[in-house]
Length: 214
Image 1 (cartoon, rainbow, N blue to C red):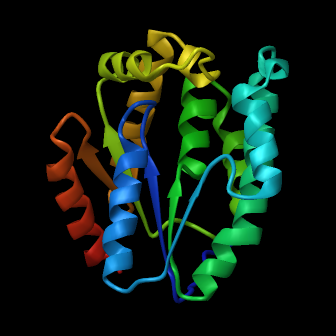
Image 2 (cartoon, rainbow, N blue to C red):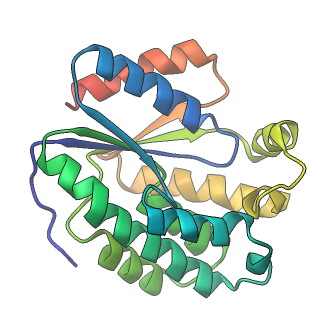
């Protein structure tokens, strides 16, 4: 396992099930921090680089991904993450930026580990190999019941739903339970936010917590 290194920047990640409101809160936090004079870099997983976006298409949107095995999915997420860390995240942190990432290694722990039932050891090894010395300073989990998550996904669904949006209720339940278990095991890094509350209340809480960790 790579040893976590210190860098002048700050690394925030956002996690949560589909439809939890992550993307909206990321946008709001980035705007607030930019307005305060911080240099902010916003990225996403999978994606964030040219290579990562190609992998994202294969993982989420490509018809070729329909028959993808959980093991292949795990390795592809790891590959996209390894590129993102080394091409964008680590250089930005070394320059002193605030980096905000929509999903990171915890998504793999939950989606491929807990929900896809891949054994803990390979998930942990691939995660650590991909991220190297980079660990989030703080991770926000937008928590919503799995039934609400599914309702929100159906409301926003496009004509061609992505692979994650097509999953069933049991999968969504495992995802939510996995995130809460993870947060409980590392309370010093995770901050759980009730995703069913009004947007403005969560925006205020997230900003306050982020500023406390800058």
